[in-house]
Image (tube, rainbow, N blue to C red):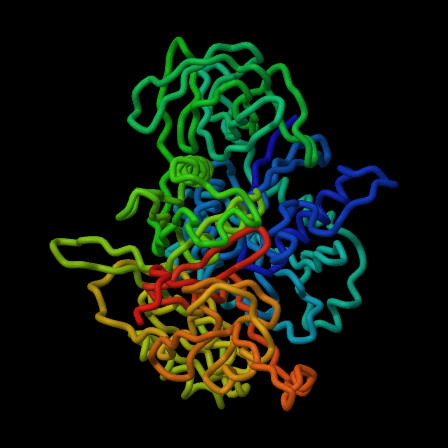
Length: 601
């Protein structure tokens, strides 16, 4: 049986996971009467809730005697580290592009990585049935992208397949418009054949010493840590003694392959022996990290280590010390928080964790705010409480000059909102490098902007464009520090005492600004209850009750109507806070508080 190893790569929301669903269903992975959920590869709770792929997943199908190992990769730029390491496992890639949106920033990022590894790339233009599809223009944009990325002559000779992943339809003939696309009948057979034809089988070296580079880690309650990677050379058997070659390249801890598995459909099926070229899952090695080489004990070799782009944003993780600590979940001690973050770093090489300025704070660096928010959400869902600080850019010294990460921001906005968006990005030290107006009423803008300038911008951007703007970013490089960027202008309304909020107290605070909490909410001294309309912090009493007398009855409180509070989600709070504020995250609540809880008065 010949093997093919492919990755599905694309920008977020272009239909990767939906296409993988259709491939698995039509290849007979599932029984005819088996209940299968949509986006079956997105099996994490957060992936289903957010509607995006966060972690790369492996699966396989069999077609005409060929076993095809397929990897569904994340499309969001914050999870680019997943894509970089997964591409080391495959020999080909399916570049998926939306027939309307065309190539977007993450498309450029993943294609550059694929071409650099000399993978055989096949282009799939998806959603050709969209009423606003522009297939001809998108094809030209893809061709220009290959040229821009300096693809060689062989890479430029790529095959194109047109699909409607939602309906499980593929064709090699380009439809002229969406009306012609709607009339297409059939299944994904053209795509199955194209994958087998275009993607080469992996190099087969069973006679060489065994070597596998670990590209992913999973966990089993019964087998412990599972190392996933492609066998570069040789064969591996159950019970075979092996060495782990670590980060330094020195021979590490030895072990024995307790169990060996390969992918069959979505499941890991036991195997007694696997050969070079296949993707293997090895159990029995606890001290193994992503990038390590698992190799033969007699002739050990070290494979090139997986390298990922450096992190751009950092955030402080602190032990929760608020007066309400321990109410909703278990409070992590500093050593427990350190161990939890170390565990996260082991399974995600794009994350860096270092001790902070105090014994109960640790600095976690990643690609972006969303990646860090996902880590906090995972900790929260495990039943723990944690506090987090304001996200900051990761600075580094280059030839004695302090440099900061710069992002390329690609915007698509209506013409009438161009002025306000242009001003917003320039205030955040953004520099416009390109502007395209195609006369359709919308303008395409390209900015180079510091990563710290993008922190907290998405909410303001959507508000300014009335929800009609599109903003995508990708890491560009490091440039000298651009200077101070204006922070939040408004101050905070901070509670000056502990207690429960009441309608009377909140009603008289409404003219002072915007409230984040409603009545009957427990608060404590130093907790932020709203945003002040002015630039200074205002310490307030949100628990104030009306003084009762025979002339003033409590029933008149019912006449007070409060404006609905603006509930702050964790992502909104991360955008809003200043350096002197932190976010308390528990399994049930998200609270904003001052670092120093005591009132200065």
